Amino acid sequence: MALVGEVGTKDVWKWFTAGRSDLKANTAASVSYAALFIIIGLMMSFGFYFMG
Image (tube, rainbow, N blue to C red; front, side, top):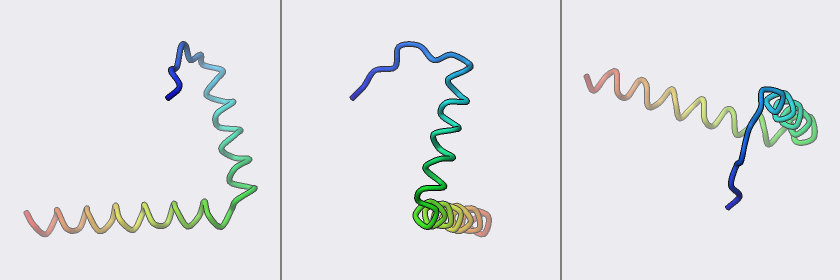
């Protein structure tokens, strides 16, 4: 496991750019995972709502 030493404010944009390039390279996988997490989140939200 890698340890993080220091993270600056400019590192956020590097991370965001890398994520966007991953999204462009693997669109189907990225959208599939996003949809999966959205569906699971909605199911949990409605489940907890109806459980009281």
